[in-house]
Length: 122
Image (cartoon, rainbow, N blue to C red):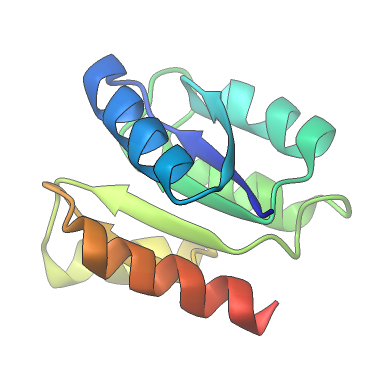
């Protein structure tokens, strides 16, 4: 069973994502902000991270950069989740170290395809 870390500060979006992922037999851990994401990722060693880009305290871009810089977490695939759908937002997310990019509102079947593809490659 693959473990996913959902980093999302909007309670409703986090709850929907967690419920839908649990229905697909993933183990799910969560973080509400970028700072918590760093410690949860180090402790839990998830197989993949879903990272909201607009987070309090430490945004998703900086959290991703820090995860990539740490020995314990540099290898974990990260999918950026954002309401900002401009080409430069995608480029910024990928430059920060995200492996994939998904816009909100989330197309769940499209997100699942990206999750499965990244898990299959790692």
